[in-house]
Length: 135
Image (cartoon, rainbow, N blue to C red; front, side, top):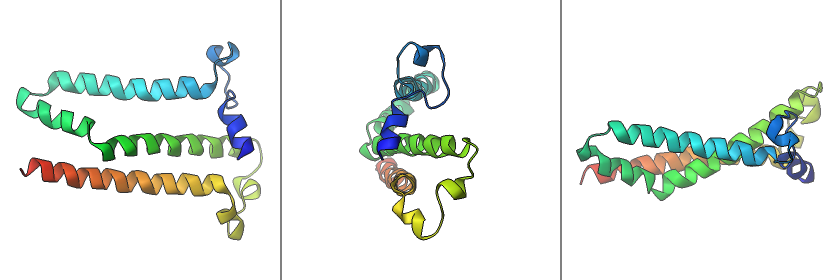
């Protein structure tokens, strides 16, 4: 995990003008992740009728959807870390052996648990939203 934390605050092997200026890649990546969602929401809210506006606001304030959104970022972050090690010229099965070693690698456990948690939280949020619509 120490290697992951060091990688997370570096340039992720993809330097750009911001990382060369000393801004860690995690900051630029998280900013773009949040900005993309904010822009998507604001554009969508412009085209939504007034009757549906309350439903969209419910989705934005749903704790399950917000949690799924945050955990999805953790999944994307660990996926980028795993992909960065694949591109080092070492095959992923040599770097991270599958089988009994698979469960010992905490980064894989975090990746798969975050994917499963994201799916479950989106499903719970969808059920709650469906219940809200039926009122």
